Image (cartoon, rainbow, N blue to C red):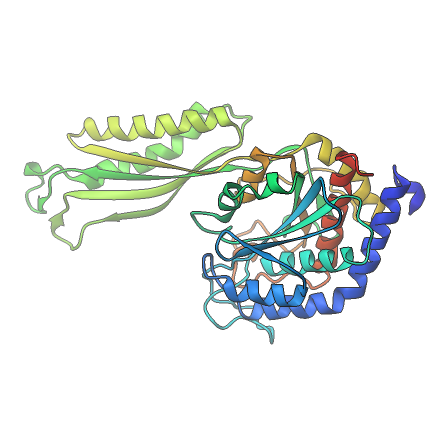
Length: 400
């Protein structure tokens, strides 16, 4: 292994961390099962946090309500590794003996991430670290308001002189055994919009004395899908999705109003600004042309998740030398993750750890599906990826 590493000190450190991870893997697997069997959605993760804090058996500090952090290593610059705490409101359908039965589920692999961060922290306790290691367990990744901005508002990164933040996420669209990094945007900015059409209701038999909001809403809904194709550079990834439409109460009454809700996803800030303005303009003008009005609310969500160039270039050879092949073509998607907020303050990298399930079909059982269940060996892969990220961050910070 040593000859493959650009830095012998980094080689020794990652070898020690991998050995420590392997030592605690049986406990990490048991911890993952315990977390998986009793999940909690965003804002209610306290039992999961309590379980992790007890399993760590070291001083921890609460942050962002149900989250917490712990620090190892010397004073001075530090590298943070982050895991999410929350589950999704999905009824599990995996059939394993340790499946959740409470109506929530770790269908996004956060249980694996939690166990992997735990394994890295336990392994690091037995190693002489060159820089601080800040383990951050973050609440509310899957809901709004999300947990990452709350953590940032506490000043935690500045207080610990955090030089980079490392994340890893299981991903069925990456082949099993591979890790994807990639420079630049790997997840999209995701912003919600609400559109309320106000007309004038009445009896369904007399539409000529009403301003029916439903055909107005239908025109807006169909037109929104055309905006991306005619306004955004076709080489740029972007999309608009409508997730909810609501109007009326019964068969023969034309309602006064109708509403829709959706998401706009972009990989470029200029496209983000453009689509925000055009969604508003299109809805308002379409409604006005039919005698109705449109109230448009745009809710800015997570920014683009952009992996730092220097961090990726330092990390990739470390992953390869640690036995984790890097995907030749980086995985990028229009999914969103509030990990992106950390990148507004310090260099970040989000790695996608392949689980290789069949995906991308109408029978996709990948992320957010009731049958998604990463293999237990994935805990080790995620842990080694995170440990490699720590070492890469320490090297960039001048500690190695």
